[in-house]
Length: 482
Image (tube, rainbow, N blue to C red; front, side, top):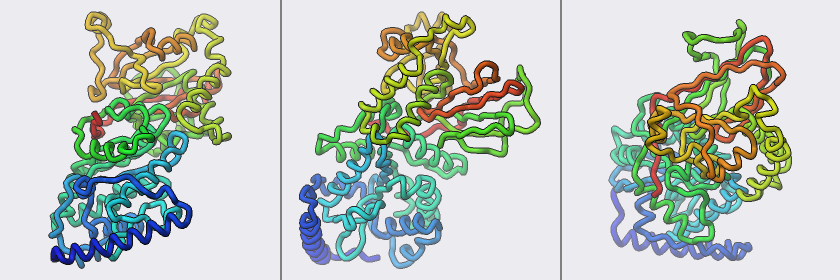
């Protein structure tokens, strides 16, 4: 496809500028008086922009769920366009952190509009569509996770680029350099990382690195990689700076952990989004089981990136999530969420029933931690001194060392002192793999959670429930925001 002359560029820019003014005036006339946007430097935006035919091809493939659906765009266009330096795809969860995702989505729209890319059907289209020159154009892709799922982007969007990589240099370079920005909480980031992990399994490299715009309540993944615990919506330049850091930040790795839950068949469980039913129960058969395992079992599997826990903290999280789902108007932001969470902790009696009331309990919650950040930036494992590490046989903790730190929380007061970092948690062990065997008795249910997603696990008096945790053999690829 021949590049237009400078005269053509000037004419196109003139037509685009005229249309930009008209569209903006129309929006203001409809009541959008704040549609003034955020000024982005042209050279910064162009570094993120993909050629038009690539953007159209990827979107058609995702929309039709077919890697061949974008072929016509390659057949009618060439690859003479200069590939962008750092193509970026942005996923936004509009419900994260008190629905702040929708605010970020609006501001991205405004910022993009300043480069003669005008948003149309402002309140209708969830997948952002921009108007430029004589047709539809997209500076970069911005997906709402309620409309475009990350697995669809991986399978069909990246699949489109990979199909044409050998024939089209621009597709090849875009696939090689593309980065993903996730605007949401830890659960949203984990969802996208899990979908990108499929590329490892299929040897489809490179895996796009992930940057984070923190919109959740805890944002421990974001904190661990230098993106902070919250997004500064009051700063007009914050979005532009976040995109710059996403494109320029250094690449680092994060361990992820595979969880298998084997439970007696017939038991009913309502698993979280992070756990999926599996026909193959990949439990180590060589390890001794204290109890009995029935002939028929149900199995679930999933992946976590921050922590796995069992006990009172998971029970409190379970109650909090149900309360928030029943009364969503209470979830107006991270601060209100934390107040409600603290109040629910008190109502569950964690502060009133110390372990000494039951001598068989030394802790009331067990946590396997992968990150340095837990519970909105706390470090319950602590910064341990070399002498203590040597005495206990521990090593310094890192997010990519293949080791989980296992600690316990005794009761509410102990957990409170841990969370304000006056003391460390009860150090139990460091491990490269974990097996838990659960059986019923006086307790008919156990409460478990992975990365903030809790569930109630039924307990059988007759048979054991097995939980196994092993490191995923490949790391997740992250962008450091510092």
